[in-house]
Length: 271
Image 1 (tube, rainbow, N blue to C red):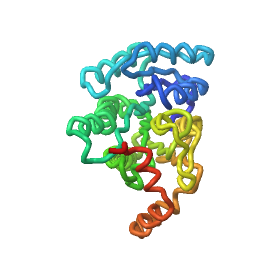
Image 2: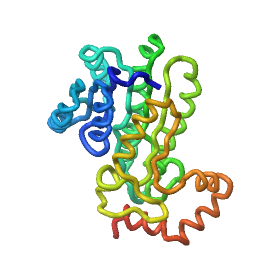
Image 3: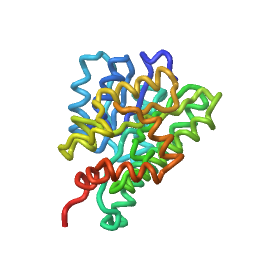
């Protein structure tokens, strides 16, 4: 955890759209100095301007986190302007759902590079300085898709399962070092973000969270040091436990309740 949050320096990737600007506002209102990053300089500048009323220091560092030289520049510029990085939030990501057999090798590689390899390598680059100062917190964005293995999102779910497992393992490895690791795992999110672009309400069994709840969860893990927060309006713990004990029953239930049909209709284009 990071205490006090006020005056801490944070680097937020994926800061130009979706959940990123909401996370940036929650952090800025908590008094955190921010470096926000994404590929679009114009969108980042608009987000930065919208945060001026908070009084927090906000800088813009355009970068493609899948490119090694950009990752180095991102860290170097953030540290040069703001000072040591106390918080790294690996929020940049994308989905590419649909039939697995329709995905090209390039599409699969792109998804893995952005959702898994980039946050792992950016964390690897930022970690030594945090360990030396015995102060830091890494926050990674997971997803309930990485816990249930939802159909027609196999690559995306696989990347989020990797992020969740990596975060959990790294959190244990770093115990006592002064550096914490947390993962925030939302389910379906309304209004903005990856699911919202489909223009559908989530299946009522799965539920739908407000994007502000996800942004607040990021601040909460920083304040509490919780290794994981699941953001979902319906209880997910019992479902996850049942999935571990009886995956066949969960599969039957998802079919019987129309959940798989809902996901297919959302993500699969008719041929």
